[in-house]
Length: 230
Image 1 (cartoon, rainbow, N blue to C red):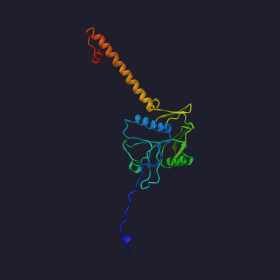
Image 2 (tube, helix red, strand yellow):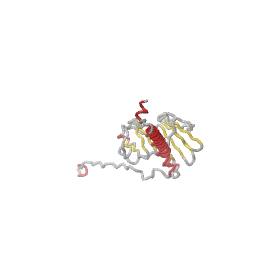
Image 3 (tube, rainbow, N blue to C red):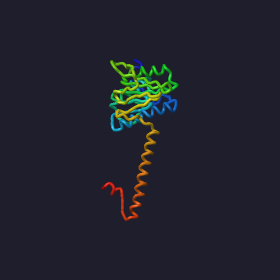
């Protein structure tokens, strides 16, 4: 018997890269759409501890296979806790595949690349897949049924069964709406809203200070507590 037959077999640890070497987005339009979807979904599910939402995160569906992986622009995994991940290793996530994925197509995406992504999502049990091409104003969607992803027609006005969000394509622009009917807001819109609210608060404070000054001249003391007590 040779030494090689007697020597114990040593398994090498498999390395799972946390980046596919590709940029998250090719342009600001694509980047803004991706981050807008991620942030709005995270805000909506902020009080749900077991809804994991990520953007451009590598998903490995099969243990000990680091060759099969994709990084959806947006993924949503129900039944998985929030928290940091360098990648989404499905076997460490109770074997739960992300149920919903979004792709925002960029000019550099070839048809073959998009076909590979579709097949990956088809093979690995994605329940809802949404693809938007901002340059062509083209919106597509697929819903799983009988173990296959079937095209959703029409997509305009479609409401996601898992997320409850509504898709509207208006004048070549995509708008998404939360289950309560409110529209997804951009970072700029949220910032403007915060600034407007601060302005209103500052104006209210200024008016109160002016009124306090007028009343003080007449020997009357007015505070916020006085107003709340009346």
